Image (cartoon, rainbow over all chains, first blue to last red):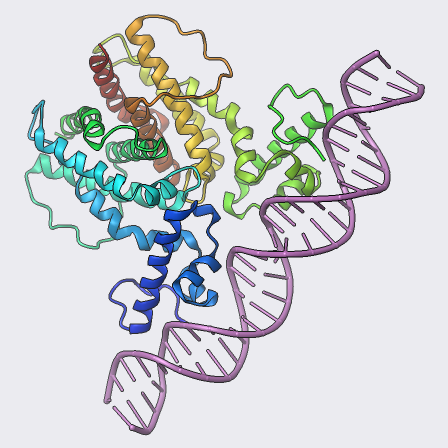
Amino acid sequence: MATIRDSTPPSGDRRVRRTHAALASALIQLVEEQDLSRISIADVAERAGVSRSTFYDHYRDVHELAETACTAMIDGLIGSLPAPGPDSADPAPEATQSLEAFFTSLAQHAGLYRALLGPQGSARLVDHIRRRIAAAVHDHIHQAVSGDDLPERAGSPPDTPHDVPAVFTAGALIGVAADWLQRGCPRSPAEMATLTWPLLSALYHVDAGTLT
Amino acid sequence: MATIRDSTPPSGDRRVRRTHAALASALIQLVEEQDLSRISIADVAERAGVSRSTFYDHYRDVHELAETACTAMIDGLIGSLPAPGPDSADPAPEATQSLEAFFTSLAQHAGLYRALLGPQGSARLVDHIRRRIAAAVHDHIHQAVSGDDLPERAGSPPDTPHDVPAVFTAGALIGVAADWLQRGCPRSPAEMATLTWPLLSALYHVDAGTLT
DNA sequence: CAGGATTTCCTACACGTGTAGGGTAACCTC
DNA sequence: GAGGTTACCCTACACGTGTAGGAAATCCTG
């Protein structure tokens, strides 16, 4: 039996890397085709060309696989979140552009993200994403206030401190994203960015003011 | 076999009311004791003194039961959300008080809400709650701008229009609530209200400004 | 109270889940 | 390459899910 909880990516063994990749790819394919709640472990394993018991050697359930399989994509998304502008830059072109990139990325994998964030999705994954966004927002705010460049926060554990503004902001972004995806992306990413930026910017300003 | 999708509360038949109540009460009990994901339909049915197949006569799964069983409680929560103040009322005592009531209600059923909103919770229910909060926020904003008293929005269907600020705000509140509950409510409801109100208020102001 | 209509319960079935043990083959290290 | 290690696969089992049909009890209606 395999040792469970292998601490992720640069797994020494070639076999492990292959099954991890195969399972992740299979899940992403399947989730584009149907609701996450309809996907059985047997489905994923078969699509990946792997036995069902091998799946259990690596993950406890589909949500756990989804968490690790999508972390890279999620982090890409989060990376395109705009930092708070220096101060009241009303048009704020670069921030809006960042947000547009955010919504564009969402739209490009709309099927995937809708399945994960929507009502048939995974509360676990949503929680995971909220933590990561909150951590990013936390860094943005403190970086903007102190002026320091934080040391990149590598693959560090997302031990968010209890930062109310950060989780507030993170929840808000998830809410907008989930709702937009669920309605089938009726507005363009640019429109969404234009509508969202004033709200996000307002939160940033409150945070900066409260922090000092 | 029973006709599925009976349109809820004032169900004529005495038997139906009894089983609905028994199932709802049983679920709420169980969810205070353990994670939602560990609760089987057989558990709920047994606790309610009802057969498993009767459960399926009324609900498709545990999440659907949770949705209807908690709607009343949820609506109570939403009712205590503060409306936007007339304009910049910085201390805004009544708004903060409303928010404190909101967090106090959450804390009173902390076990329940944590199980429902947390990582082991129900994405369906979270989606449902977000829609309801968004609808309430939507009404608040338009009421504040137009000055009208909307006609109470009785048990009406939560057909939220695509209102970005509303879902943004709704997501934010859910994010704060979920995070706070998950950490075991480390701060008092009053502290949470004090921390949250500036953020919420800022969003209200942006919305009012954008609307005119 | 009789009537019909519904709800409730029982049984049964095909599947999915999660766990366990052990055989085989692939891998890394030396 | 030979070594031990470890991942992979197979089998099997206990349980939960969701569906279906039909018997019996309960209810609303007139």
